[in-house]
Length: 151
Image 1 (cartoon, rainbow, N blue to C red):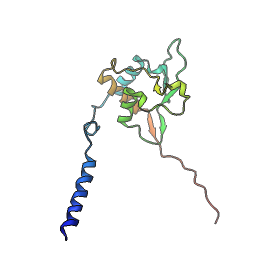
Image 2: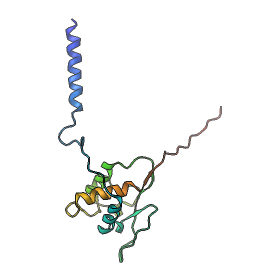
Image 3: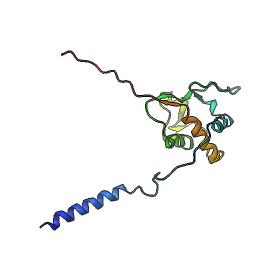
Image 4: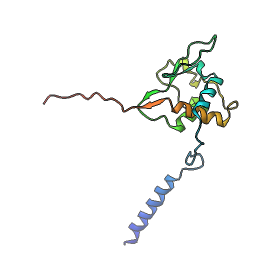
């Protein structure tokens, strides 16, 4: 009689463990080397990211004949902009479109308007660019306005 509950428990543990296997498309174990933020600024300007992006608190040169940049990066945020989020935003910008901007500014038919740099950017430029961007985010605790009810 005690064998059935033990077998059931063993089966449940095996089933739970199978769900923990990250699989071949998992990002588990993925880590690029640390980048150089100064080289990242150079890459940002070289690839003309400042055509569409500004960096909070940083004066960037304007691109002659271009519309003013409209997507702000950096500044105060309530959650960490992770390495993975920034890498994904650069190499797969349609994965998550910028929020808070007019849809026609950031996308066409649900696809990001951001230029696809994947064939033109080295891995070193990518990791330097991520180091540069991460250095311009300031994580602050979210502010909640709690309503006090009278007693």
